[in-house]
Length: 600
Image (cartoon, rainbow, N blue to C red; front, side, top):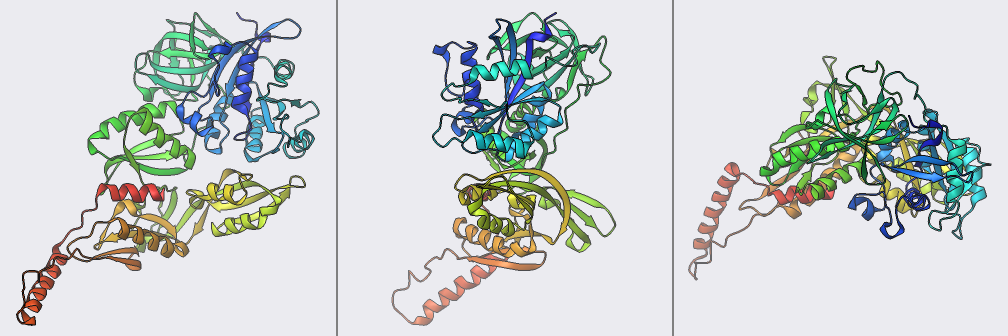
């Protein structure tokens, strides 16, 4: 049995770009977990996408040995977490596997939106918090202002905050010593039955399902028969080990350890992130607390551009879903795009990352539909329909009211741009409920905004207005009744389901005009004039006309009476009228791709 008093499990939480990954690199160097010759930037970020975008997408565990100033050797299990609001689910799982957290605050920027969100999440799980003020080596650093904000905004005592710089390697040992003195040893180790929390998972083509676990009580070793508490699936353990930072097999995983368990399961759906593993012979009655079910908020259809890739897409999404528990999916079909999947995401960045991973990791060429949210549509018969796809909207005549989800947004901005940000909030149909002054330079706006309005460009425009200093965090609010309508796009009087959307009546005309103009630009000319219309029910709200591709029928007329030319032109006119009544417009696949990629 390992000595629990010499084990510390902690994670690093912070706002985006406050230096979590750089700091974890310095800790790996200081504890000599990685030799200097093997060291590289963003050591724990395994994906190319993480390196390119400079953000952490997945949590990354690593086990380190550290000899304290008093000469005692400790085992540290560190979990590097994402900072972006869309990956807060990853953060909540990491926190459930730890006893403490290092809360990083940038000395140049102070407390930001996700700093507040992540600190609140950690405090709600009763974790010990070590405040760390990072980037103190920069000329614009103001550690005292950051210290004051930690106390005023987060209500965390900051007199013992550690001053550090991940880039320059300052204060690393002070952080490690604070982890020993201020974070408690592993909890719940005296529970009678073995329990391990699955905080992440991935599928290996050779080994099968690999579960990343934190062992809370008991032990797990190869050959043990284990059981998943969520669905009762039983399996044999094939291998256990730790991360240093690559997977390193070991003989046993005991209480307090963070590592991996390879189970003899090939079906990816049988392992659920957030589930508890226990021994099949004497299962634990209660799972590990602190885990909450995820709720996807943004929905989009994902379709293969080549219909032959449908089965490959199906298998790829199933493998991605085991690695990313926040992704939900169900099969659907579209007249225009064929067979695909309706996928649920936590936010726009999450959606973008999933699509990019499908393209890169699984070599798929895909197209996604315009993102939407879940609307509650109440019909006259008293039934509430939950609609995430405009094509499933009931008949407008039978609808009593439509409710849309809202968010409670906390927007941290410099004081000089408050007017422009309030104008943006109002443009997005939002209401600013109150403003709080954080210090002399920064304010926090608390606003209620419809979720549908922030889907596409809100974050980008907020960053532009605030010159990169604004930050947004949000919680999901209530459903609110609003004047929402389904807008269809008709090409030659035929509705195209891929372009349908649910919009607020006041914005329908603007959006309809823009879509019709874009389609006119992209659609190839036909032999007859084609009307492109935006409609709400029977009412046309915008129209463009695609001109016909003419044929010069008078080319063979040399001289002679004008009536000969007129006769040929009249004959052509009759033919075009006949063609228009029976003609059909086929929309090329690349038009869908261009419109939807431009829209999304």
